[in-house]
Amino acid sequence: MQFSRPILVTGGAGFIGSHLVRLLVNKYPTYRIINLDKLTYAGNLENLRDVEEAHNYLFVKGDIVDHELVRQLFEEHGLDTVVHLAAESHVDRSIDNPMAFIQTNIVGTVSLLNAARAAWEAPEGKLFYHVSTDEVYGSLGETGFFTEKTPYDPRSPYSASKASSDHLVRAYYHTYGLPVVISNCSNNYGPYQFPEKLIPLMINNIRHSKPLPVYGDGSNVRDWLWVEDHARAIDLILHRGRLGETYNIGGDNEWRNIDLVRSLCRVMDELLDRPAGTSEQLITFVKDRPGHDQRYAIDAGKLKAELGWEPSVQAEEGLRKTAAWYLSHTDWLDHVTSGAYQDYYRLHYEAGAKGL
Ligand code: NAD
Ligand code: DAU
Image (tube, rainbow, N blue to C red):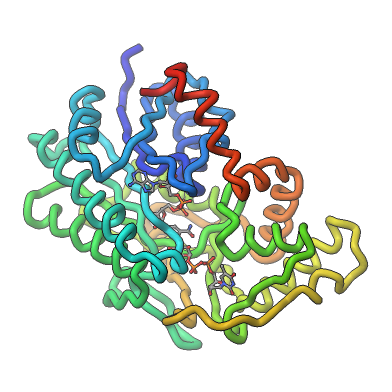
């Protein structure tokens, strides 16, 4: 079959990437969706079980830092679009080991940019879409919102590496005329998030009646974006975003960490049929994260006005949907926390049955 648009999605076996791959594969049967993922601890092909047989989907195991592999993918598939999500994504890990973040998030991004630049003689019909984070803007006080014009002020090795990659993507736009677009979004939540991040970690710990570690006094604020709303926003920007522009994506859904955890405790008590107040007793205040950003909040007005996007899930409804999903996918939780998810790749892919 001749495909109308060959798209490389990097990091498609991760949390957000798997939602995006699913959306693109199902919504655009004439597009070819090629998922390049290294399958780090955060990449899990079980996330994509429902689309792996689709005629327009291909998985390639590999590292974005491997420039020769990336070059070959451009050549072999005539790629005209890259949606770049592959990254080391967890702030606490970046504090322990910054170098992995420099490699993947900075060097890996440049490897992709160079391959696109070499393959694309003219910018027409081409797009390099870089998925980034609101953390590049730094930390807010009690009021105000990040806009696309907020100066960069990253404060963790993770956010500094993402800021660096954003700058490089913009530099390739200005210097070489590479057709790029960037989006910066707030904290995603929903199904398939690795249980090191706040919400699935708390759900899994409540499930096992383990302590719920709240950093500092729990007053830090995050804006929570339903992951499928994010994938919808990426779809819109991919098709209608203006080249060289940045779009902020947020959930209009701010919570103090402690309020979110308490609310999750109430939902989990209900879903697990435990007496009210049981889970809240597990809350334990622990040493704060070094350099912990106080508050993130997004003004997504540009995306709403230009492309008509709105978040669809908010407040406790999102927490309830998320908790219910994890409780009905305890196999998934057990696989990713035990490392058993790697068996899926070995059984289904390594024998050469699928993918490269
Ligand atoms: P994730 O950690 O769940 O997934 C990352 C994926 O990238 C994994 O599948 C992993 O195997 C893959 N990967 C890592 N290094 C790679 C490499 N060198 N080569 C190829 N693949 C590699 O991350 P996520 O939460 O889905 O985030 C996706 C993107 O969105 C990231 O760029 C992140 O910075 C950005 N982002 C995430 C959030 C969030 O709340 N999760 C918010 C804003 C922005
Ligand atoms: O804002 C977007 C960013 O959101 C993304 O770019 C990152 O990839 C993503 O990991 C996320 O970063 P955060 O550091 O905000 O997410 P995390 O889930 O690690 O933490 C959310 C908040 O909860 C933060 O204030 C720290 C706190 N926290 C986190 C954990 C893991 C706790 O209090 N206890 C915990 O055990």
